[in-house]
Length: 340
Ligand code: FAD
Ligand code: NAP
Image (cartoon, rainbow, N blue to C red; front, top):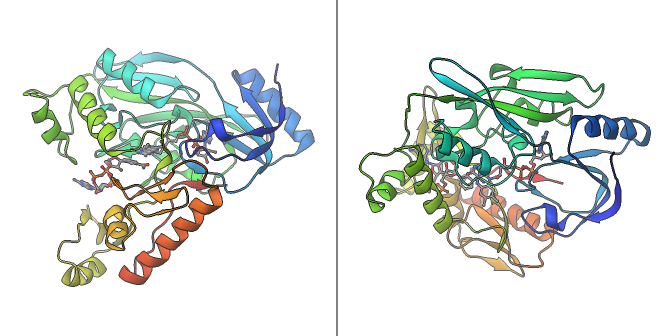
């Protein structure tokens, strides 16, 4: 039985720790409750916001609609074949707990994505990724409920139209589906990816000669804990901007003036990915603070709330950063965080 709450603070439900009110708020722990709530909203017709862990959004004002917190739980081995385990996780499961489960079971493929905050349901939304692995690399399918008619639809990998921090659910199908569960296809014979970032260096520091699922996960956790602010202590939503992907011709031109400008060729294209953190640091924002809104000193791609910043203050800071980077480099930074 669903229980709606009116004018509820969303502060405990977003990792930026922004205090705004939701006109209506409801947690949903089963498919029946989800259907009941969608029926209720057909009559009441509130704009709907589906909330997972709240770690990739910024509230800039009160939400004058219905916030549905998806708490569907469960992880199970759906099937296995000669090469793969097919693991099904419900949308309300915590992502890192799913990673931990797979690491313990020796299901290989998502250990590089250890310690990403948030829930399973949001993970295909923006094709989460870290250290050279994205969910699309291990994604088998998902089930989602269509908000308009309550039908349940299965999407395979191709149907999700995954891209760099992108999926069909951020574009053509925006606000049309609620993701219920995800099936990942994880390897029985491991194929590790330790070449990215400083994983190898960390493994050496850990005295690991032969990496395995467990040690790679541990290395990623150690790096992340050193570099990223813990949202339970300093409000943030991870990388605020995407790393821009620009024409390689423009990159080569810029490189003449900025010899140490990093860039990663995007394979089979004439495009280059430039770390946004470098652009932000070059334009002087690293460690910048205005009131309680700031640019994190150890990773300038992360905007932070040191205490009582409003969403609007953080948003304004992000606009200033975009403008300065554009004026200096002719590169337009795009926000990764969902703004409400
Ligand atoms: P929310 O913030 O609750 O929601 C995000 C969006 O998805 C919203 O638009 C919401 O409406 C929608 N949504 C949520 N659940 C559903 C659902 N079931 N059905 C339909 N729509 C839904 N991201 C990375 O990719 N890689 C990283 O390495 C990474 N590191 C991070 C580190 C830190 C410290 C933080 C704070 C964030 C980081 N992030 C990273 C961003 C964030 O963790 C991911 O985007 C995560 O997937 C968000 O999950 P969530 O459940 O918190 O989503
Ligand atoms: P990093 O290792 O310092 O690298 C800086 C950037 O360069 C990264 O963002 C990465 O892009 C890119 N890069 C590094 N090595 C690369 C390679 N071999 N090939 C292609 N691109 C490469 O990055 P970091 O900030 O510490 O983050 C580490 C990983 O965690 C990254 O994958 C990052 O995306 C992820 N992360 C994401 C968030 C988020 O909120 N989205 C927050 C924290 C960390 P990519 O970002 O495309 O990988």
